[in-house]
Length: 446
Image (tube, rainbow, N blue to C red; front, side):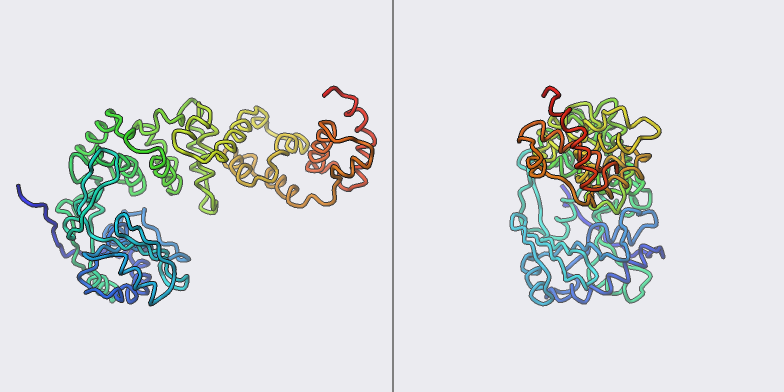
């Protein structure tokens, strides 16, 4: 049987804004990468960066001007040693992944890169479906053929990258024989028939790339995808790894499209993330903003809160932290309150419904995303909660003659609600309210 091979092709670089931005930022960090100590032809740029350089349709590799590149480098040598050298010369932080002889270098902030992943070229095999692969050091060709999809096999050596940064309009690209044609046609294609069985997380990645890039799965890849789902291949992967794949979906710019596609293709079945209202949760995820710094936790609240099953069902299946499961239960109970369907809500109603979570910005922000019409009202509530002013506390009530217990707690809760609603504006107001209403609350049955 013929050995797998890669192809080297000289291609033109589209003059797109993304490509121009990448060239500028790559030009700033390239001199640093050359100090790895290897020949410029012995280190290759791989991953999303060369793919973005070579296509006009790649919306999935955005480089905001305030951020740096995410650079992936593969080399036929020990990547950890290369990372140590970069850190010794330039500083920053280095994380070694000894299990696969890889490393991630986080350069100092003034350099034009968010992170540099350093990868030791290797050949992989899977002892059992869904398990992490076993590997041996390999060549660039071996490393190409362990990848998930043809469009992710594109590679540029550092010498070629330097020419690009100097203004060259063409470059020599190393790739799987079908990669450039698949890139032109917008096709996601696996490299071999057992790809999804070996690593079912590729099912999730296929959907993310499909939706992010506006590509489509090839006919054979779609058949293999459907067969893997029908064979319940995702069950061979730990819940923690599946959770990580869903969390990556929360970070996509077209998150709702990705999540809906995952459901349509059966990848979220059996996880407690479906049901009559679940689509509302997925669509709400699509309204998350890039300014939301905690999109992963917010995504889980929105998905679990709207799902048919109790949050603990998916939480246990996916290994979510217990605190997140509890938070999702709180959010779920809020979503089920019919009061949100009303056109207008009084300050008192809002404070009474949300008083217990008035300091939980994640829950409140998630509620804003789920119910956009509540946005200004919840902003108002959060501002009130952030600046409560003087208040009576339990010691004050004890001094007024109340004994510790449930009644005292109920009075404190009511004071908090009325304070949030703006109905009590001073300690004097609160004392007057306690004087007028405390006795009747004390007399009420527990």
